[in-house]
Length: 72
Image 1 (cartoon, rainbow, N blue to C red):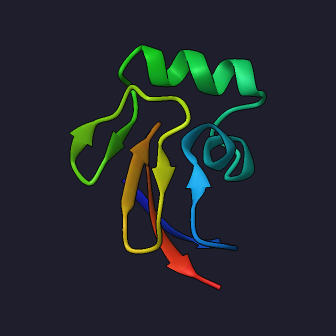
Image 2: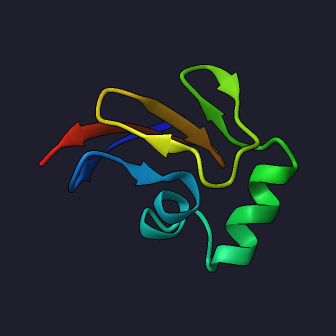
Image 3: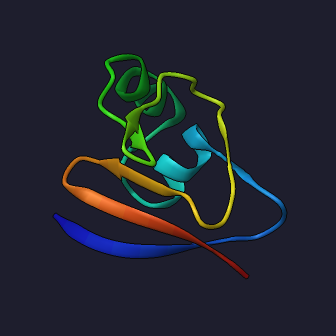
């Protein structure tokens, strides 16, 4: 699995926005579908809420990528 860090600007980022910004989804619709299929894990647990608010310190896994969220 490829590890990468992602800087969160502000208090949080929504899951669908993160997937698009990190290049794991080409569009918001694709991000929603990926999440709905249960292909995303947050902190090791499946996450199906498209607009889950993610904060620095959390880890998101999707499509062979592990994103560690950090503060700006």
